[in-house]
Image (cartoon, rainbow, N blue to C red; front, side, top):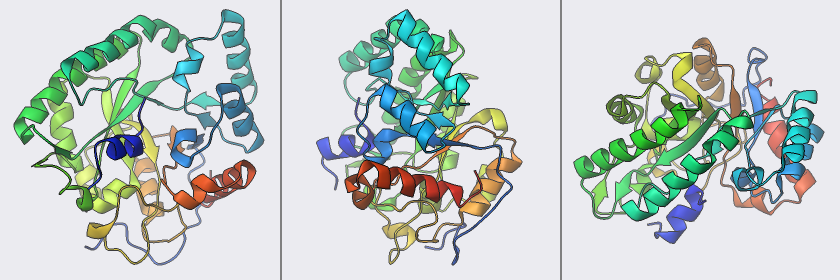
Length: 311
């Protein structure tokens, strides 16, 4: 399964923020959030057992499921894994959606069949959701054609997840530097994503909220105020790069939360907290320096960046 960095690489990557600030926030009112460890987002190479051990060692309370490995577990391996998670107070965050829905119908249907075949096994691990991103451009589909394709395909995905009580979280991608990548533009803000989710019309479809995309899109708190706790599937916090305006930020170049202090993450998290969300929060910096760090140093840096915000 491709992450967004790989997706962009394989298809050729071609203002004032509502969250602007000058100091690193330190807060202690967000204890209900669960610090989540997503290995792919920080260049962490590990298997499922190692991921769980790292989470325990560095005091994460949530992990992203390594789905391809988990579905091969024996019943005894699954039982032991889940018991270890429970004993250390760790829950699953949303997993990356294992379906390529952006290309041909044939490829989409192959992914859908994989999900249909494995959904009961996946649900038995108490994985709460899957998440995925919506690319803001397309090479050949107009906005309306792309909207209709997303609506049709993601509704089918949501229906499969709904059978076992899982949610689907969708993320818009906000950097304006991506908008010249392809011929046709597509949704890249919270209100446009809301239109798609409303059109999908499935109660188990909600939002993956990322502070970086919110910042780049120029979305205000009032733009997100329609959200309720049940709408928020997962949360990511990232900081922006110094020396670039919101319009000049690059999707694949971000900082760990609080490292630059450009994005007011306290305001972002306080808003989400005010909605009653009490789930996982992870980082997705796509940062070359972080990716190249030795494992222990990397995990210390990532955990410390989240601890700045009190959880």
